[in-house]
Length: 282
Image (cartoon, rainbow, N blue to C red; front, side, top):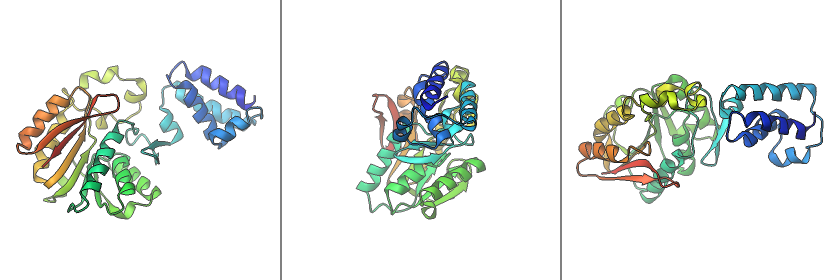
């Protein structure tokens, strides 16, 4: 079997389980052959070794039983950076880039902001690391309930050489931060309704950590607790950002106004025009 034949076979099989079967087949084959896209297509007529065929077939089988491609590959790009991903944390998603863009823009416009930045529910560390990479003076504390997720986030910080500017703290929301006040609080917390869990794609419900996705009956259980606790931790002039489901804009804005009655509360949309990030500026 040559490279082209392997690619076509992978595409045919993965189209049965994924809307991105063509892309994923190529990614998995490149992983086996250790080739970038240009070099892969330059070698379409080359024969695969027996070991390479077996390795590729093994990856295809894993994807056919709905293991996410990102977990199979062990990495995924986010905000122009390559991150290690494991089942210890949810897979980075493009919609979270909206939150990161807002955070970076705010920090660049408020370079005199006092205090650290808090990344609540850091997971694989994509928000903390992306901000630290873009803002060299940023000092960040990354919080998560999962020790395994924190270890993953720390490895990603080391990968991008920002580990000296990020503290990793195990705990629930802002509880382990004592009386500290932050100029920016960013949170990517669970917001899926429990009743909708079984309707999610198999890739998500059978492989990604449920604790990081299931937000309770209304999807707002964890976000509500953050908005109740955050007023004691957001510095004057500071900004709180929380990623939300596109149907939660009005509800989260009302919750934010209860906790921050004098703040400017808005809901920002993603590129598709959907509500995506709650913003609260004191």
